Every structure is written in structure tokens, then in C-alpha cells.
Image 1 (cartoon, rainbow, N blue to C red):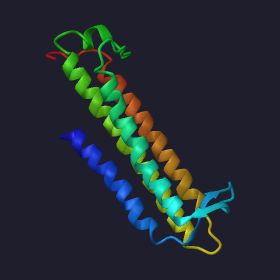
Image 2: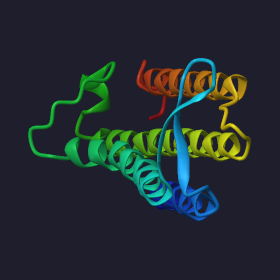
Image 3: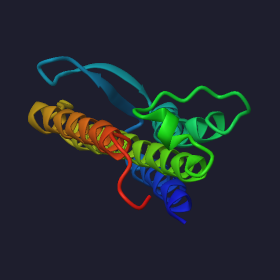
Image 4: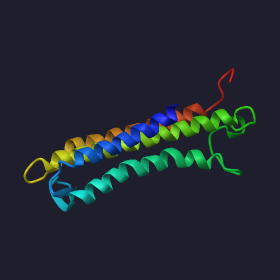
Length: 165
């Protein structure tokens, strides 16, 4: 059920990018320099297609590819205490956790793409277009914190087997 929710969230983020992108100007300021000033533009249709695809495809690959590859015959999985967690009686639970956990990474990356798109929409609402650097940096910091949390969560999960598992 959680894996299905990951896909729904990712696809909803891409659909939101598509819908909100329709209100952008014909020529979208799509790249910004360190000062926040626009330094590249692209046609709205190209921007919307690119950003919607980026918001869907990269997160879906992050969410699903590891889940498929870890279940392949002869897959090599490197986790702490692998001998315990990949033993016959725990392997299915371990693979399920990893699949779901990578789905969470996909959602995190979709939310990053969605936030960047919203900042681009906001930047294009001003004349001349200008990206708000504070919110952009905050977004990157929050993504980095989420990524570190994701890594820590996975490592803590496999640090050592809990009693009764």
C-alpha cells in the first residue's frame, strides 16, 4: 500500500507541475545565476514537458529500480549485518523495507523538483524574472537534511537485529 502511495504522490507532483506550468509566459526564464537573475529561457511547452518529466521519471526510477534489482537472482546487497538481515528467515522483510525505503527517496526527490518548479513559477511572475535565492537555498538544505535522515534511518534499521525479529 505504501509503495502505491509513493507512485501516487510522485505522479501527482508531476501533474501539478504540468497544470501550473500552463500559466507561465510563452518564454519561461528557466535558469538563474547566483544573483537570482535569469540567464536562460525556453519555450513554455518545452519547460513544462521537461520539468513534468523530471518530476516523474527521476523519482520513479529512484523509487522502483532498486526494488527490482535487489530481487534479481544473484543480486549483491550491501547493508550492515547483511548475514543476519539477508538470512533465509529475514530476507523478505529486508527486501520489502528496502523497496519501501527507496520509494520514500523517490517521493523526497519529487518534492524537491516540485518546489524548484514553484520557485521558477514565482520567479517568472516578477519583471524581470528573478529567483528568490533564500527559498532556493532553504529548499536545497531541507532536501539535504531529508537525504541524510533517509540514510541514517536505513543504517539504523540494519545496525543490529532487534530482539524478537
